[in-house]
Image (tube, rainbow, N blue to C red; front, side, top):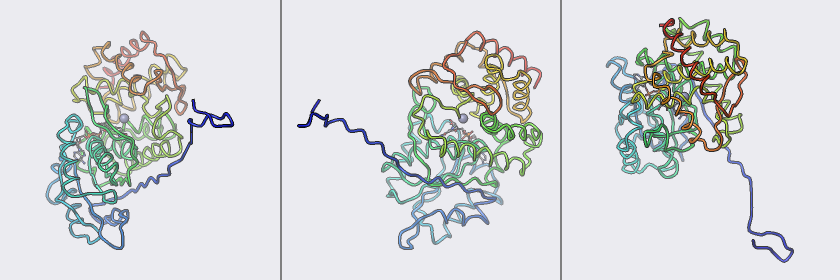
Length: 394
Ligand SMILES: NC(=O)c1ccc[n+]([C@@H]2O[C@H](COP(=O)([O-])OP(=O)(O)OC[C@H]3O[C@@H](n4cnc5c(N)ncnc54)[C@H](O)[C@@H]3O)[C@@H](O)[C@H]2O)c1
Ligand SMILES: [Zn+2]
């Protein structure tokens, strides 16, 4: 160790520092129509120059709507016509769904587009899509030039209620979810109601399991609201669903901005309640199971476990499982039959964070705890209980 004349160590310097970010969240009824200005107001430009923008859309968002109410086409033509926007290239379609995170080809293509069109750190990528498309696009935007401004338009209930406001992006590698990725704060997020219209029922309903998850962790009143309006949610009642999404999104946003650990350096990852098994089930089903479906199953399972081990009333746990089923999400899938394979998710979860295994469980709704050990026999018996419950629920 080097010391100066006074004998002090001179080589070890620990300087904590703070970087300040602004998280911009907007809620719109139709950003491809009357609310388009909400998007352009987010574009900061130099000396009245138009903002340089690339528009990327989820291929299924683009294909799912008919010509008369074609969200992606409407948004694209608004951008083409807007003198505050310099659209650097025609709208680009990213193959929607988990497959886009499984392939290097999509990521490379996005990086190539950024390069070909000379996008720089003051340019914008506007991406409309499900969580998977947002993840791969966000990763490309985060690593190109060490960060290009990213405006996310989440187009699934899951992405609006949860990942859209997240500060993570990732692609899958080695058969593992989100193995490559970065933390990056998006420039802005716009949760739009019209963009969800073309979303198939299966994705619409299962995406709201993340809202149930965050309600169980942080907001008992929101859980009761979802429980009491489960039928309306299943019917896609717009007012109810918009409220659930907005409240869930706000809870996630507050957790990130006020929770003290946005980049997850601590052991615990409380928003990942129910995710140790969810993240395992997705690759086990070849990603046939949607993330939201896997989360619903994982939340149901860890809620039953919380009842066995941590004092959550058993009746409440049953109510949670029923609520998940009542909004139209599954609480079982056949892959769980391979119980030992599912339980490997615990070790993968530990490895992803490093250090001790830390899993969030519930003492009650709104009261979570971190535990460092899972009693495998009890968990196996919860899996059996869930199997029986699912037989009654469906
Ligand atoms: N970065 C994070 O913090 C974070 C958090 C949670 C989840 N995620 C990731 O998000 C992904 C799941 O996201 P998801 O649930 O949105 O699923 P998804 O992105 O796979 O979308 C589901 C399906 O709906 C299609 N789609 C999307 N919007 C549509 C629309 N409006 N109309 C018609 N079809 C549409 C997609 O193409 C896809 O086929 C997973 O990869 C998960 O790991 C990331
Ligand atoms: Zn999730």
